[in-house]
Image (cartoon, rainbow, N blue to C red; front, side, top):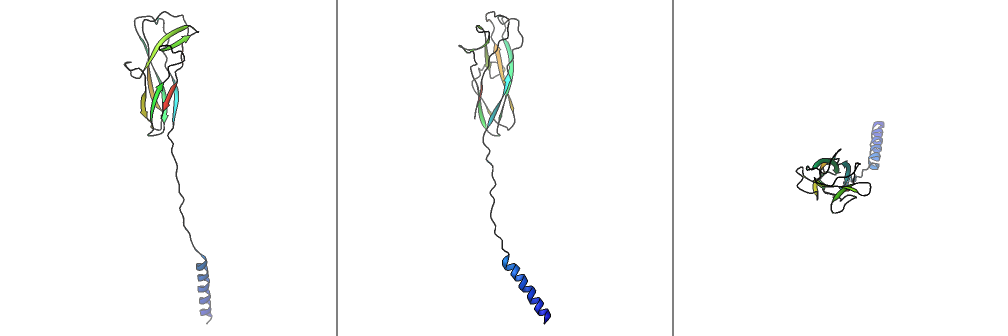
Length: 155
């Protein structure tokens, strides 16, 4: 009889535990939104040291800058006219000494830079800018001639 009483008490205890234990489930939504973004790394177009810009030959140089856009982001790169623009891009020394130059999007220097398109890879992409100082310019004083051209990436 004692065994039956202990067995009954054990079953009652188990049923009491089972009656109080319940579960509920739900979902945890996990997400991330990746926005299109681009960054521009500055570069240099350096024509080096020259002794005569008025000669018969063009002076060519190649510069680079970087564009880093989110993977799959399409973008267009444009270049501003520079700080010394007047009927064309110009580098300046002092206030009145100028050297004309152009920037092209191709190594043959046949296509003036307008818009260069690309698609982001998630890593910095190097973009080349092909510069030319055209021959036949007037002689200018010795000095360091410079200009700043803004790079704009639209995406």
